[in-house]
Amino acid sequence: MDKKISVKVCLGTTCFVMGSANLQELIDTVPAKYGDKVDVSGVPCLGLCSIDWEFSKAPYVKVDDEVIKEATVEKVLKAIDEKLK
Amino acid sequence: MVMNAPRQTSHLKREILIRLIKAFYTDDFGENARLIPYQMRPKDFEAPYRCCVYKERAILRDRTIAGLGLSIEETDDSIHMAELAKKVLEREKPEENPLTVLQTACKGCVPSRIYVTDLCQGCVARPCVNTCKFGAISVKNGKSVIDPDKCKNCGMCAQVCPYQAITKIIVPCESACPVGAIAKDENGHAKIDFDKCISCGKCVSACPFGAVHEKSQIIDVLKTIKAGKKVIAMVAPAMFGQLPCSPKQLKEAIQKLGFADVYEVAQGADVTTKNEAKEFEERLLKGAEFMTTSCCAGYNELVDKHIPELKPFRSDTRTPLYYTAEIVKKEHPDAVTVFFSPCVAKRREALKDDNVDYVLNYEEVGAWLIAMNIKVEDCGESSFKTEASAEGRNYAVTGGVAKAVKTLVPEEIPVYPVMIDGLNKQSIRDLKKYAKNGECELGNLIEVMACTGGCLGGNANVNAYKPALKQLTNYVKESKSIKETEEAGEKA
Ligand code: SF4
Ligand code: SF4
Ligand code: FES
Image 1 (cartoon, rainbow over the protein chains, first blue to last red):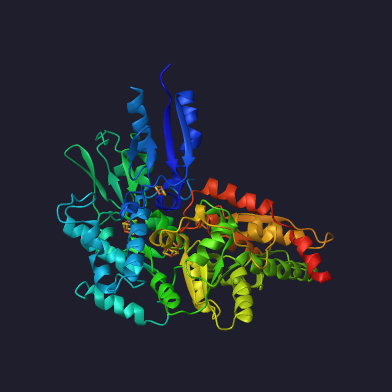
Image 2: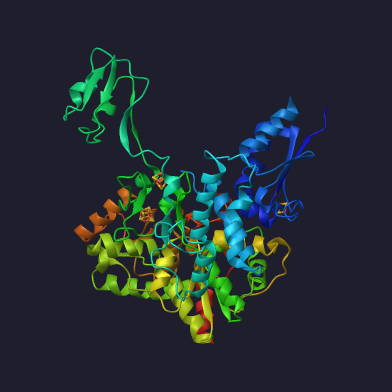
């Protein structure tokens, strides 16, 4: 069996305020949709927000090694679908 | 209904606040505030939302003006940003009306009207033509056409069309406003009538262009802290559901921002509960059929402006914010007080209360933490001097206020709570009916929350509703009941 896809939703302060608060639903909906093909969790600051003004691109989500900027539920699901292809 | 739904416009508003706060801490606030639209939309930037970067910059400038706490409508675009910044640094009091509409953003939204879509088959029956009492519909080139001069927006044609080809185009802010206070004017710009507006904030949440802004008092607060004054934060209970940290970490984070101390407004809620329980008992013994709560600022404005006949039924007990601010000013007469609020309505209440100097909403607090690079999840824990009760902390949730009051009403007086969970046209009609009949068939203690879900559903919340509720509920569960704290207080 292939390796599981890992989805890390950043729940650090910056990402949280800039919108990952609304991505928390992924933690419930992703397993419901993809079963055990995807591992999803909320994680502390990924360290991306403090690099020179990069707060404006928060919230960040990592799907395996790919960083999704200004993440939305749709963008994350699309990235997962791409990987599963 | 989706509460606290994700909004791209919130991202923009928050980004501007962060940049504005950063600009404040530089040597040249005015110049750096002026540069915000240029940093967000540099020269070769592809305009993501509008025709060109110039238009986007103009709109971002207007949003920055709201961040400065000024009225966008009344600010001339020829005035240099540095001059506006100076004006804000010199002002002593925030402006009166808490909202301002970014009219340039508003243009894209068409006025409310009845519209015939492509689905129209030009059928033979033509029920639309026959139904229209105003003779506004005719068929041209095989399609129905509405004459805008004759159309009265009644919507009858839309109801009879067998293809559902006719729809009513709604204006989001107009249809969200429970009291008809916002409407597009003849230029297609939304305008708020502040004689009618109850500051419920529903238009702020509803507008897909993010055109309705709260006038921020963030610069006023930053300036006060920078001047070395003793500034004390008063945090409404909904705040404890907003950020990824414990209540004690939140307190520490707020102190890192420069506040001398932090009080829970739930502490004032405990006073409200005691007084309101006593008042309820007295009123019922005197034969009253029902009483309404009085803690929600949006509801209070509704009663004062639109349903005066409800006044005799509204509790005379003051709000949690009122009592908290009174306690703080008594304990620290030299302090400047700042209320951390989930909604617009509290800004109006604060303006009338001499003990409350400024109001910040949760978006602004979040932006401030980001600007200062304070990570709440890494903060240490700091305890509150006075711990509020479980019931007080639960005021932020629909049903929480009535439940708290019920806890303290003596058993022989039966309490039947009724929840008005969010003001809208229907719930306002219900309230009017109770006032007119002098009774409410559903119960005797009516709790009114302007926002659906309670304060956690306020327009300026950061967290999504469900996780916010979970987080706050955990806090409530680990708190002592007001009955225990009451007894302890009596023994002492
Ligand atoms: S919803 Fe109201 S404020 Fe927003 S763009 Fe439309 S008319 Fe303007
Ligand atoms: S704040 Fe509420 S009452 Fe005022 S215009 Fe907006 S929706 Fe209407
Ligand atoms: S908070 Fe998400 S990268 Fe720092």
